[in-house]
Image (spheres, helix red, strand yellow):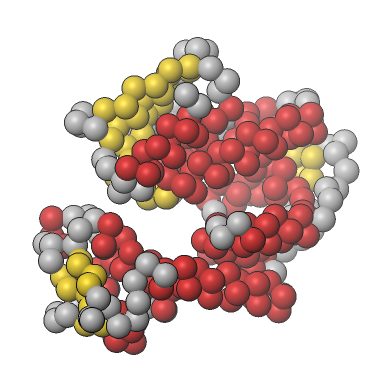
Length: 320
């Protein structure tokens, strides 16, 4: 069974499980999924600049990003085996994560489709990476791996050298470099500038909207807006995606349905958004009233309410 199918089955169950993946090339990785989120994963094998903050053995801000890339690399493994155990405890050494299982599947399949092109585009590890004159996005608009690649590009290292210094796998480095190059943030020796990647992403996101994959489409539009915040068209597309996402949630429960807190929030590890909704439920409220009382945006409140319902912390009943 392909890894994507295993994860989709796990996502559909929504239970907690440990998944250990063993590739035929000897690599092994594990992840823990809990209520449709990957909550922990294998520590990355490589220990480069991204994994430490200057203190020997101390985890740096890039460690979670490296662990995420390590999991994505598994989708490029053609053969192997896996073990799934819903009772086993996770290994003691791991990295805490918070990645929706469905997002990991979609991102992994996308990278699997793009890998032949990327591998063909960058065949030489000796090719030099270089910075461009393009101003870097603000720190909150670029993640730790991309920022590290842009920083090391100032020294014009070979791709192979950059990979070793940062502690990235070859597929992880090349797919990141490819995205940065097409954004005009780095250059690679002998590689021409890329196509209109933004237009291609917008078109793909429109297809996601048509397929009712509203959250995924909204994710694409938000990512594009971080690099082009003044684009009115992107803002309109994001607003439409979020409107449709809200509409899809309201198909599950109506505005007049009554929400009651029935579980103990202290028994669960909740994200900040879920806690904010829990705090607004000091007494039962209609969904529409809860949306108004919540400090979060409408969509964020509805998504938090959906997660709380899935975890059995709230009951949502018709007022009729």
